[in-house]
Length: 111
Length: 114
Image (cartoon, rainbow over all chains, first blue to last red; front, top):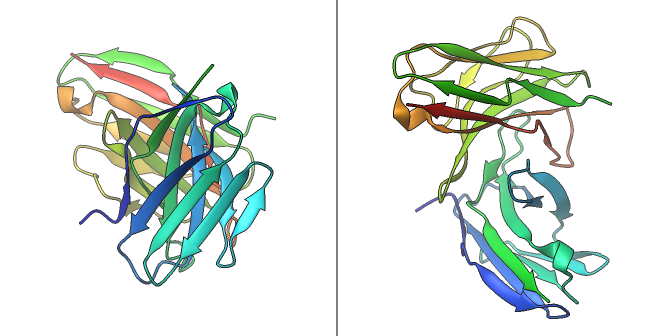
């Protein structure tokens, strides 16, 4: 089983739609969780961290379920500019442990 | 603000040739990483470094060597390039003790091995 698994998509949604991405991780020692965004032919950039209590940043909401080892990202009122690949990232964070990236979920928002 | 700079950005090699990718960061970060990204495979860690003079193997280290002689530079070497090493290579860095999970990436280096 891969350490971090995501549905690759693509998710094709109309503008204004709500879309949710899921991610599962296999290492129960994982402590920190993140969502990154990667535009086509660009480098990944941090979108948001995922906290145990859930957190929101504008139209984006991230949730963590430690019992099920599951992370989600919800995007409300999708914009054309949200079209990108969304990467789930996990780490045990024992100081120098590298982050582990999922393969990403591709989102296309259509006018 | 330069951040993380990778050179070269594009390169075409013939099988068996050697080359070095240079990553330079001006943020005084302790940790540096080399990833490769292939279609359908996501980002895979090749090698990483937790400080000047140290390196460690990642998920896919075979065929690559690295060096971190200076804190700001992390070099990735291909001694004898193979077509399987055709990929986009990303360098990244983050500070010691950083708990935000933010990796700072370079713009990538596209390598084609014929």
